[in-house]
Length: 227
Image (cartoon, rainbow, N blue to C red; front, side, top):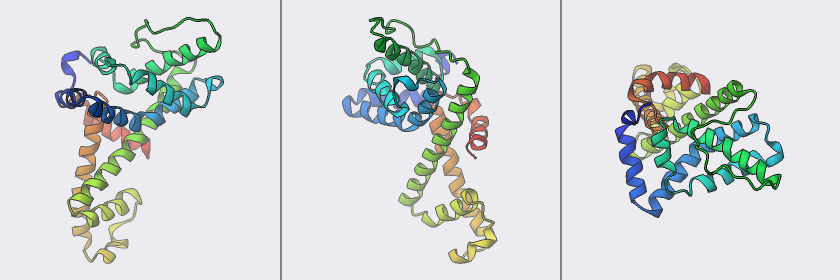
């Protein structure tokens, strides 16, 4: 992805958070950790780096090191990489750094570019596992955001109907009576929430660096991977 294709809305949001100082950076970091912690732990397991510690501890250490760097997100934007790939590559280097420290070699890879990837023997398999974990993480976050939106907009019944039909897989006819609406009205209410859910997914994928033309296809892929 060329630099000039970086989503303008995300540029604005990231710059806003960075310009807000410490509090804005904390919010940005929490957002990144909330989405990518699980997928990066999956990557960590896939590289077989168990001798370096538990995956959750390793990823926490990685975030503490990388996200504390003032220019970390600038480096990502200049790389043209999807954010999950940038983080995965960075974690690969972090694992190498930790291994060197354990060997007391005294060498450091801090001067290496994080655009280069760590290359475990089963790279394709590890990346596929991470992508699946990313899909699950994104869908969970989008569902949580959608539920919060529905709660604040007085659409709690809409949310419950959406969840029963789309998440629990129940036909409308099996539960609409408890809501006092017919199947047609229930479907309309669920579609309202489904639209908000897809909007939440679009926002998260834009945050990962997806181009506008890619997002609709990626949403379908995400839903398939997370099913």
